[in-house]
Length: 181
Image (cartoon, rainbow, N blue to C red; front, side, top):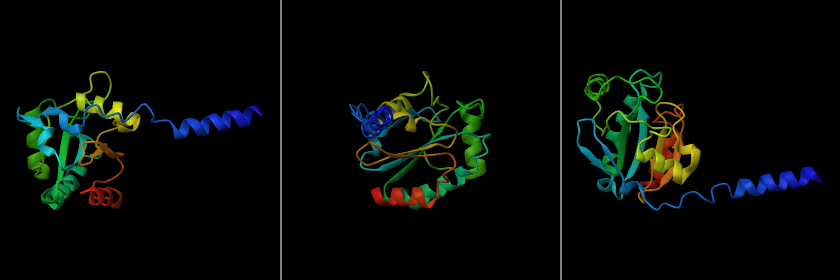
């Protein structure tokens, strides 16, 4: 009898696990971040676009994903996709300053999509963007490692998240982007 009750409670908890989440008092478009060259990147300028936010790092085993992110940007930017790179040292694999990160990205990967300054993406010092993502989408929106991906839909809400292992040009990401563009 106790097992049935516990199982029933687990099932109920599963169905209602996000009840307190996704209230979206703010949307993604209400936020800003500092660009790698010191300018303010106003997310309000991305309204009615799909945004793939990726925390990046120069010394990570996934750093080659920069190349695929650039391909995504080139292929879909005219259709309404924004790729936003957020260099981060939250996992101790980023260069020491923004100018070195910018040069690394341009020289090695010809990156032309927007990049933020080096930004904390987890914990109490996380940038407002990542706190907002966690508040509205739960722990699945908190980067587990570099090159973790958060997909924002045209309404400024989180459409989904993708692990570092999921390559930017994977069918999973491409299909999701194409379905909401």
